[in-house]
Image (cartoon, rainbow, N blue to C red):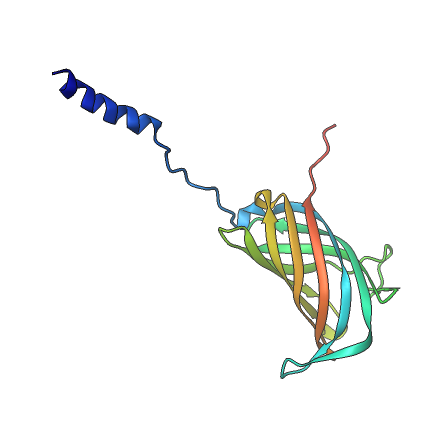
Length: 176
């Protein structure tokens, strides 16, 4: 009789002590929301032709950018950037008072695995816009982002071979 009583009790105890499957939190578009400080550095190495052949420049051209990227939580973004390429600040058309380029717009995607993409359109004269694509990895569900430029296309020049990495950190409002 005691055996019959203990059997269900042991099974019930096992239920309470066994690990329970818990859903892992996932990233999504809303993981990126608000203002992020953005830094990027690297080099433009040359051009890429239609056959995907790289034509290197005689020397790599260093590039550095600082920016504020605003993610809207819905797959759209804006960026306000200041860039120095090959030792020269990039001049906005028309030039701005502070040297920052006009606001750039773009889109982004985020997967459940906290990876994603970002596509930027950088306004140029006569509607000749540069496009920039980045591959993203979200850290701590979007508190910080690591990225590399996966492609850059400049009007007249075409596709560029670049080696540029970027980092973004969510700006936390200060308490007053």
